[in-house]
Length: 462
Image 1 (cartoon, rainbow, N blue to C red):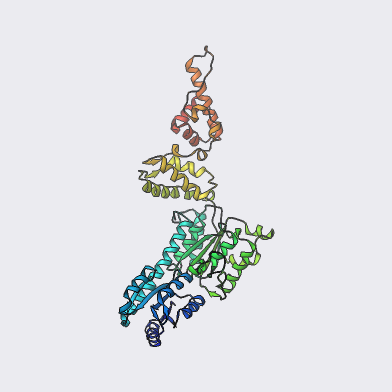
Image 2: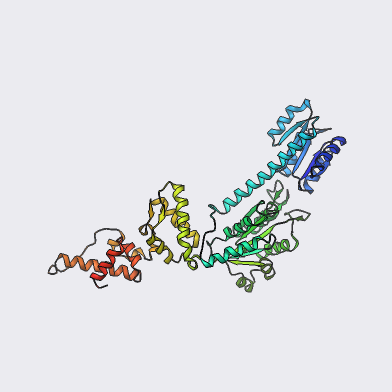
């Protein structure tokens, strides 16, 4: 329920506005002076304030400035008489949302208050989107038809039906843990509220606490105003705690309390704030090992591990690689103005044989790099980097690496044709050894068709 504060020294105005807005379902309180208003804002989460510029001996502009110092996100509607419209315009320049001239009609008040609260909601959503985009640039859908990934999708659908259960997602770096977390959020009843994510390894402990739980004005140096934390931003939605295994023991204890009590307390705050949020944590570490070494709390592990989801690495779901590659190829081809329209069968097979230690993130980066440097219509095996072709470029003959003409020595009594054949046989033999006899990879690094390679292998009895 949105909380609205009326700041006016005329009691009948406060009573009238409280009645009008109370009938609309808002929580309404009032203050007769700037000092009273300060106390209310410091002690409560006020969404909107209605401020009379004429507060007896107090200057309403000064009250506006001080309220904005306490809570920069507070929306303020100015109430003014005809004689102080100029002051109301000055208030708008200082960040007031709107102004209303006395006397005002009830319908006009309802409309302006509704617009102000909608604006507040949109601001929060934009802030959450900006934070999410900074956290994970380039969000992509979950793609995969392999049996291993279908099991993950099934688990996502099941847990999405239960909007409050905590989830722990495990898997190697780059497997798409945040995408799975987003999938849970989007399929749940919480989808209309915020999805807020943070990498717990990205901030030192003192900053992480402030980021998660918020802080009050003056809580520490440079805390010049109140700042809500991510748990508050995620109220009624989902908070995603990535790299939870990197959180230090002190923060683990505070997080455990939040999970147990479903309340948070801002840094420097004196009251607990109730939250309704689903917590999804993720890690690429083995938390059981960290428990055994004393670097992760066992009680926190069991609080997080209510519904575990393990995402298999890409090398265990190779059937998904062609579809993922095709998706990224289409995405980056459009982004960079390329004409790629398909992944060749040879390139897809080579990608399926590669181990992908960086998982989907590495695949995405490879396709992006190809789209920057090459053009279509098809992504060919020759476009792939050496590591996917299964070779070390330093171990190839110079002619295979650079195309430069090597210095060749041979016996003149053998003749040019035989010398060339011996040299060609040597290059093919070395490439086959490097790829452990993989004909497709060998043809790719030598940049010849597979049929030609097979012909030459038969010719030279390789």
